[in-house]
Image (cartoon, rainbow, N blue to C red):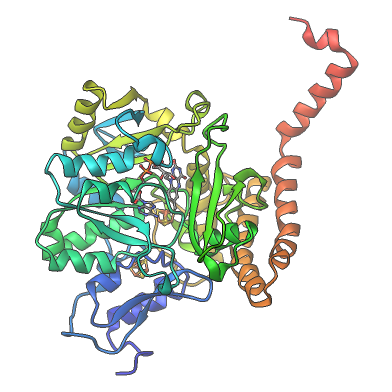
Length: 480
Ligand SMILES: Cc1cc2nc3c(=O)[nH]c(=O)nc-3n(C[C@H](O)[C@H](O)[C@H](O)COP(=O)(O)OP(=O)(O)OC[C@H]3O[C@@H](n4cnc5c(N)ncnc54)[C@H](O)[C@@H]3O)c2cc1C
Ligand code: SF4
Ligand code: SF4
């Protein structure tokens, strides 16, 4: 069989729909289920995608669409959560099902200092191991083989020390097939840390693969805004003076003693050999505002799970004014599995973590922009996609445009433009070995985006008018 022509109708359909449409998030679940025909690799824009391989090992007739988080053949988040957490006391359309909601951070050890936010994610993983509930953790760490072209990858931690070295968030493509192969071969109990769509894929793998089903015991999710291609790390590294081919490590959120708020952080980049490490202040780097969506995967624009609804526990940043002032970082914590609801309550009682109750509205408010983009924005993108024709994944949000003002429609269209242009412009800049070419290509669209964002916002003109009036009639404005 030729490696380029799948004769398996299920694989063929997956390629013609999810992969060809650009809806693949690169999770590697399909390659986990069908290692006989599929393997993961980077495309020319630094995105992980499956490709066909010559027949490897015993042939299988498993349907990879059943585990793909973007296939209509796979169960959606609502169905999986209903099966997994039937007794969860609470539920709504944004958070899914849950047992408890908190904001908090770790007070024990160095977890908070070493973590991206409040350190709760790596602490929960460690605590599951320390309490003997799992033997190993699957999470994302610096790559063991930089020759693979990736600087981070999924890895297996077997000891508390190994888990500790896996702290920190990587806005970087990583896939599951290698570690899931290890799970199949190794009779241990595992916990998985993942993004929401990977959590859905892992739940589906547990249903479709007996060994993964028996051995994967707990799932921890990170809240997710969107995922980036490898170009995001390379762009930061290059801006810091390290060429993409020389980049070996990047800390996307390096905490400093000078930070005044949780949003003040640096980028730490390391290059090959004796190259000195470099630091950049995040807010000084052109185009790194998360809303611009540079290097975003297209799949993420067609995703409606912000809070990891199928995971046993989800952790994110508590982006709320009352926590933003603390530069050490604070997590939001959505616990769903009863054992994890109890685990965090016990740890708070014994003083190992600091926890405060949050109401559902505050949890949703902490991810305000993420929900706007993945509810209002998603409905509009689905409408546009349907108008253009062709396949797109079925979502829990209905297609539509009437709910949006002209300004929002423009903003959402510009975000898609920025997403696609950033992939192409960065690849061109690498070809020409010229970082300024990338900035030059992006700047006009970024300027237009900020114009629509600010100048077309009625609040902007209202504020301007108040400022002007307060200068002309200071007493009048201050009248109570
Ligand atoms: C692509 C991406 C987008 C995100 N978007 C948002 C958002 O919009 N809003 C929000 O509140 N939070 C978001 N987060 C989560 C946030 O950045 C923090 O990771 C989270 O608050 C946990 O912080 P912590 O201090 O508890 O993590 P830590 O204690 O530092 O632990 C992080 C754990 O996650 C693992 N890990 C790191 N990168 C990945 C990865 N790519 N996939 C799977 N596991 C990984 C690490 O190995 C480690 O075990 C995002 C994370 C990622 C990776
Ligand atoms: S999203 Fe995951 S399962 Fe679906 S095609 Fe891509 S890598 Fe395969
Ligand atoms: S935005 Fe959605 S699809 Fe994209 S990585 Fe996050 S959870 Fe997955």
